[in-house]
Image (cartoon, rainbow, N blue to C red; front, side):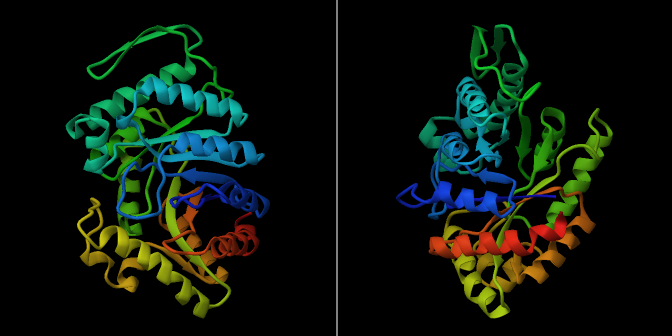
Length: 328
């Protein structure tokens, strides 16, 4: 099992983010994941995931770098391919490029991209990026959304034949696309584990009808997390997580799997969704997830609205020292 973190996102300054990733690497985390939102009602997101990961790559040695997920329809795929290949070089082959459709209408309006084109743009974009990564000769690509002619794909990626490509999203079509056009499906933090389990079974059915192998492919998952030495401390820290969801989903802002009503009571919200408790309780929770569905990479978000940076770091250290060794 690989464990990863989402470092602090959002706020006025980048200060401390790389140092937090260095702490995570020191205590046994193997991956660093970043999200991609251009506009949000909360304060826990930043744009430019590849730029942020480039900084983290320079400050760490072995931490694998994951975009989960980059909203591919918002960008020209050539731009994404070049920057991703550059990051794979800078990091000496540590990149996994996860992409998704996006769902925030305000972001598509700002970028001048029609939302009804997002599926087509994502499918064409990820196919172009795969060709860019793998080709050693000039490539040409034409589709309804962009055109590239006789373009030399530089730089060549360090990973051969290319970095892993993942697709996120919850709809049945997106599950199917993850099998057809990528190496793995990556579930986000919002849905409860029952939905994850259902979608994993859907994914397995598609894999059985493809040339992929279920046992050898990646099975990642993202979750919200709160950890502390005592249950009393857990109850104090979980208020930051509850505040995050009230701030983000308690108003008019919507998510396909989250409503204002669903965030009112923390226990109802957290049930079968969040990972929280003492180290011993969290070990049991992770083991229970492994019994329910395929899982070999778990990325955790320890930072929540208003939480001091030193408290985030305390959680990272405690998880690394007390939980990760149980899965070695």
